[in-house]
Image (cartoon, rainbow, N blue to C red; front, side):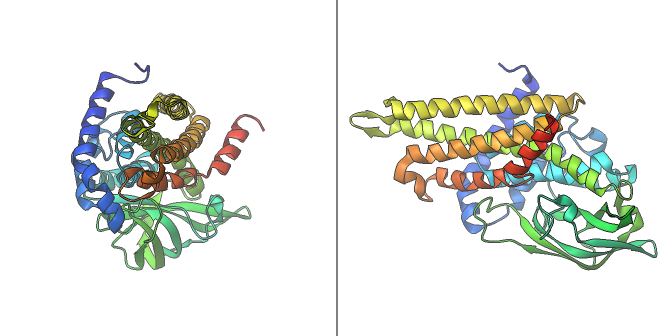
Length: 381
């Protein structure tokens, strides 16, 4: 029983859980080992209606609420964080800016394609000197002959280099306004001359997701590719991150749930001193704490999402949910490895992958330190 959940949500959870267990689970470790982005699983998520799930039907969406997206992300992260990250990043950071800030022409041009599973869209914010300080953007765009001339680089960008990548929403400096850097957002198609993407390999986590370095050299796009108004780039990007934090929190929640279930199953099977180790207080208490933290994380996240779905301010609660869920994922994954003992340290054990995958959750879309800064400002510090 949960006051935020309807029968429709329960049905969706069953569908996505069945898909994750039958189609993702058996190949997740292989894709992780090979560092292979799966266009097939991406297409399948599109066929299930998970891309643009909260968009109106006129743009190819399902017309569901944002909580439906979080449940889908949660259930896939319960099995594989790489596929969950593809889903989360595409829906929140990819589709989000176009849907919430794009013109009607931009929505009709891009959104129907981005709900099929054939394509994904990226969010170009991070640079060498623009991480936690998002206003440190050094990439530039100048308006010349009704076209934006773009030069610069972006790092650690999700969904940006695979054959499925259609383009990116890019934050760039477009001049100065009252002595301050003017930041704007521009839509850049992947096929644009001067746009190149270099896949990032050798990651510790999310090895089957697509992460890239983007380069823009004299890249020209039409004037009408400006997203929102001139100088609104920072506002667009930061508001997008508020919603994105909910999906990262859902990833943390799902990963914690999966790690807990693995630890509980193992603890009931593994025997020492003549009985399952789950019967020993030292292990039983660990599992009890894990279950309690997951329950608290789920309620915090669902409340934050309820605020968004009902058009209430939710930035503070999104920051809280992302902070708490990501740190619960870390704590649960760590204890799950401890319960597995030496078996949790080898690649043949799924918990080893979960332990690696959780580590980015305290870094991406706002580090835990930045989130505490955000929360402290909301509470009047």
